[in-house]
Length: 275
Image (cartoon, helix red, strand yellow):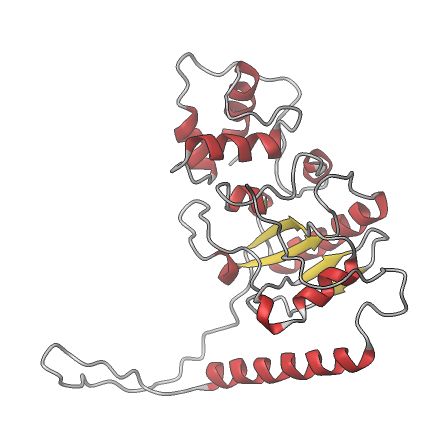
């Protein structure tokens, strides 16, 4: 049984309300955010020599010498989620409660309203446990975007339009490769189903966000090693059936059974040449 992307811990809040978070509560969350940000900035400002102790208990000689060639680390992936909740307001409330320990950089409502909740350079708690290629800590190198959708309904057109504009801007701002826009299901196939088979990945690819198979497909070779192909694209194949389902949710969508048909193999063979 797959868990919802965001735990339902608060009552419904209508997106049509003048504010998704009451002003008093908003002031509190902003204060907490600023405090945590300042703590992180103080860590980045530290200029101490490393303290390294050898097996005999002796401190190795070390010193601090400042380089002049450095910059801030930037995100290199975007992970797309659906909220599995009932409204934009409910998700915002969930992400402003400390005990939930979940968050995202952006949340997009059905009307196309974009709510930014964390600076792009900060680490949001959105991806959780998973694996993509050699990456095992996606939160540290990605931007998380939650889309207001319960997982059973089509995505709203204004919402998708806003998402595309946002993704194009992020792609440009941080030089994110086209292949590095993935779904939560791709990152964590054993745990997560989102953004699901109703998400318009083909439209995303037409806008330079992720890839989509070509219309004309060359048949996959006989005895095609599809598990190796999935692994080379990025999927965690430690549970082959889950990897197949995640791949099909993303690239097939009309059939999400854990079996690779000839069409599925042809699609994978085509995609493997793009990654």
